[in-house]
Image 1: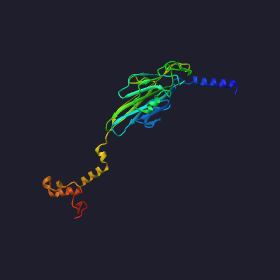
Image 2: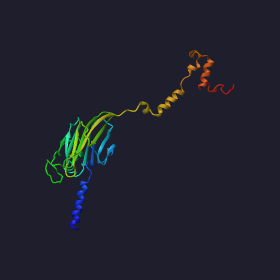
Image 3: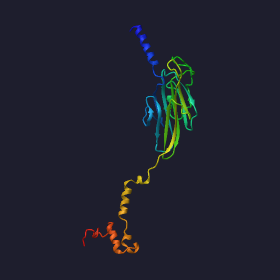
Length: 273
C-alpha cells in the first residue's frame, strides 16, 4: 500500500465525518433495572411515541407487582449527539421529586452503568460537568468533556390493587419544569452550533380498577337468574281475590304466559275441547 493511498483514505474518513448532518442523535445503549430484573432492550415499554434508533420521544412502563410494597425502577441511557461522541458534557436543571434520583457520567468510564445495574436510589451526582474541549480525544482530567450518559431512578410505594406508571421523556427541547438531565455537544470543528438533549421522567401510582361483581360472577349468575324467573310463583294470576280479576280470567292469563295447566299448557288456543 502506497503512502498516497493511506493519505487519501484518511482524507475520506475526515470528510465523511464533517459531512455528517448536524443534530444527528443516536441511542447507543439502554439498561433498565426493574426492582432487580435487568434488561437491555425495550421489553415491557410502550414505544408508540418513541424513536428507538435516535432515542428521542416518550417511553412508558407499567409496573404491576401484584402485591403492596416499596419498589424501585432505574434506567440508563447512552446517547450520542453527533460526532465526536466523546466531546459532550452534562448539566442538571431543576430538582428531583420525592423518591426520584439521578446520575450523569461518562458512559462506561464512570460508575453510572454499574450504579443502575446495582439498583436502588442513585447518587444524585454529575461526574461529567467539564466543558474543556475533547474534540481530539486528548484531554485528560475532570474539566474535560467526554461520552455523556444519563440515569434516572424512582423509588415508590404501592398499596393493594395499585400499579406504577413510569414515563420517560427524551427531547431536544427543554420541557421547562421538573428535573432535567442535559446533554450538550459544544461548538467544535464538526458542529457549527450547540446540540442539546433533555432527559426527564416521573412516576404515578395508579389504582387498578376492580371488575364488577357481575363480571366476577360470570355466566353462572345469568343461569341462576333465568332459572329464578322461570320458577316465579303464579299466585297473583291464579287468585282472583288478590288480583281483582275473576278466576276464569286469571287462569286464562296464566295459560297465555305459559303457567297454566300441565295437561293443557296452552288451553284452547288451537281449538281443542
